[in-house]
Length: 263
Ligand code: F6R
Image (tube, rainbow, N blue to C red; front, top):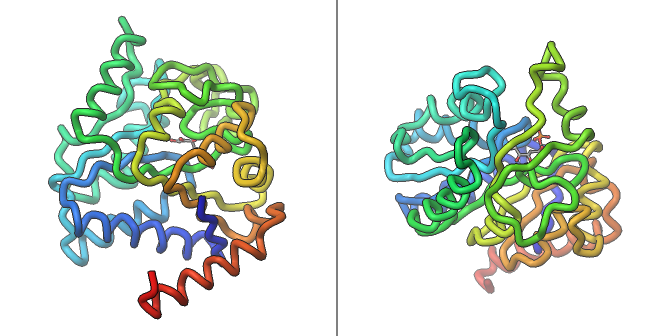
C-alpha cells in the first residue's frame, strides 16, 4: 500500500488524473472503475479539460461505476447516473454502450448483479478503480460488516451514511435506503486502486484503513490485501496517521529515485 500525503485536494486530483491519462495513453481501451460523491469531482473536471483542450480520446474507454441507488429512476437528480452524466460523461467522447452501472431495478436483481460481474470480466477486468471513502470506512456502498469477499449485490445503507448524504434530500422520505454496489471482492480484483480522501471528516476512516487491523468493520482496511493500492490524502485526512512522517519520506525517496532513473 502506498500513501501519498498531498498539500491539498487539488494536488491529489492532479496526481490521480495524471495516472489515468498515462494509463490511457498506453491502453486506449482502458477499463475504469468510477466513484461518485464530492471526492472525485476534481479528477472528472481535469479529464473533461484534457478531452476539450488536448483532444484526449475516450471513445474506446469502458467505465463501471461502483454503485447506484435502488428505487431512484435513472434521470432522478440524485441518481449516480445523473451525477456521472453531469460531471464526466457529458464532457468527454465516451460511447454510451461503454458506460456501466450495477443493476438497481428488479425483478431478479440478485441474478442481474451476478451477471454484472460477468460483464466486468468480459470487458477484461477493471484496470484502475477510483475510490472515495465514507466517514464510516465504506468503499462503494460496502458498509461496515460487509464481507471482505463480497461481490456485486444490494446493501442497506447505515444510519451514518444516510446522515452524511441527507443534505441532498429536502424531503427525507425521498432518500433511498438501499443501493446496489460492487463488492469488496470485486473491488480487490481491479489491477490498480486509487483511493482519494480529503478533509478532517475522513481522518478516522483513513487511520483505520491504513494502519488498523483488517476488519469488515472498516471496509477500507480490506485494501491492505491489494498489491497496488494508493491512498491519496490531504493533510487533514492524514492527520491521525502514526506513520505520516514515514509516508512523507517514502514519497520523497520515490520521487528522487524516479528522477535518478533508479526505479
Ligand atoms: C460513491 C461511493 C462512496 C463515496 C463515499 C465518499 O460512488 O462509492 O463510497 O466514495 O461515500 O463520498 P464523498 O466523496 O461525497 O465524501
